[in-house]
Amino acid sequence: GAGVSQSPSNKVTEKGKDVELRCDPISGHTALYWYRQSLGQGLEFLIYFQGNSAPDKSGLPSDRFSAERTGGSVSTLTIQRTQQEDSAVYLCASLPLVTSGGGGELFFGEGSRLTVL
Amino acid sequence: GQNIDQPTEMTATEGAIVQINCTYQTSGFNGLFWYQQHAGEAPTFLSYNVLDGLEEKGRFSSFLSRSKGYSYLLLKELQMKDSASYLCALETDSWGKFQFGAGTQVVVTP
Image (tube, rainbow over all chains, first blue to last red; front, side, top):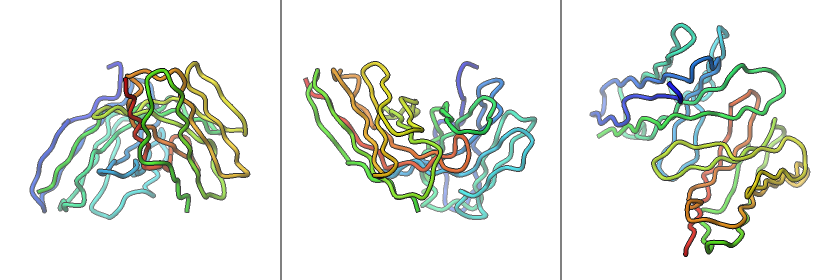
């Protein structure tokens, strides 16, 4: 597709359930990122995949959160045993080939809004 | 830490100029970015600064002073469609890895 695609756009779940959020990045983009945006807060970095390198998981808030990226393309963010504080919009973003020097303009998807009851 | 502070909300009149300030405390970063986010939509890139000084892109300009820990985004000739949240972000140790401020909601009135 032309842009970053995320699904589902909205997810309501009960506390304690597991959820999976999917991201399909822009074709050819090698780097993929997950951020989350809680009400009234700034975007918070979660995890970053770059090519075949080990992902940067430094932003994951707990071991209930995990993500994988298959075949260098689609990524799935999994939240186990969801808690009410996990309620947020989960945004995926991608970048073309990453090189040194900075200047990474992110292309964001529309996000998946997660509500944990 | 890299505390990033920006005003919560600003109101301005159509056709006017608005300056959104962003201050931060950090020991190092690649660049300072500005993103625009309309309600319910994805953030979109506006501008970035790596070196000190002013970067101009049409109606939008961004300024950075690393020594002062300060940046601003200047929006000129405001239009109603500019009503949105403006996010100040520091690119930290990797491309695309950002520390974001909470955003400034700009309301443009007729």
